[in-house]
Image 1 (tube, rainbow, N blue to C red):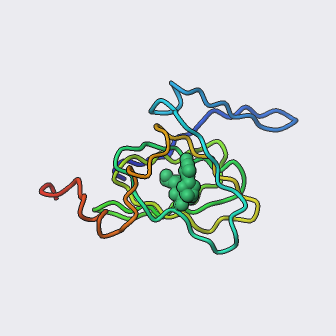
Image 2: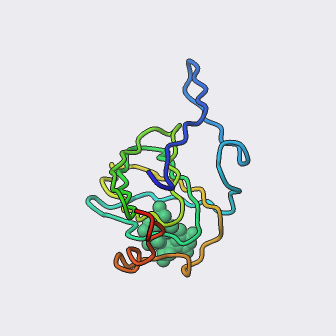
Length: 137
Ligand code: T46
């Protein structure tokens, strides 16, 4: 799907548990400038409902399960994130909605830039108007 993809990280397992390392310049397709995490999400809450103009991000479910609905101008997909050794890359021009947060779930996000509200498109019709495929499909 356009500007999205699953990244599989290494996973070291031994008798005592698992360890997943993430190295900034090799495992993530952009330089990380910010991290944040979403947790204690109330039952049935949905989050997101926006796209970004320039931001690249990787979403990693550190604990529990989260479903992400991705919408581009040509397709829509729901992805269940439940492996702490897998991340979901989302680039610019992709609408995202997060829902079905399992109790106790924690979603870690690695971002390519500092927080900037001007980079958000929070209105779905405005998102549709920024169609990067216009004239191509
Ligand atoms: C995204 C999804 C996956 C900040 O002040 N700094 C930050 O770095 C972030 C991410 C948010 N905020 C403030 C802005 C709002 O007042 O935190 C509040 C909640 O943010 P928002 O409603 O945008 O949260 P989500 O969960 O809907 O979306 C977040 C990210 O904002 C967004 O970029 O892709 O997670």
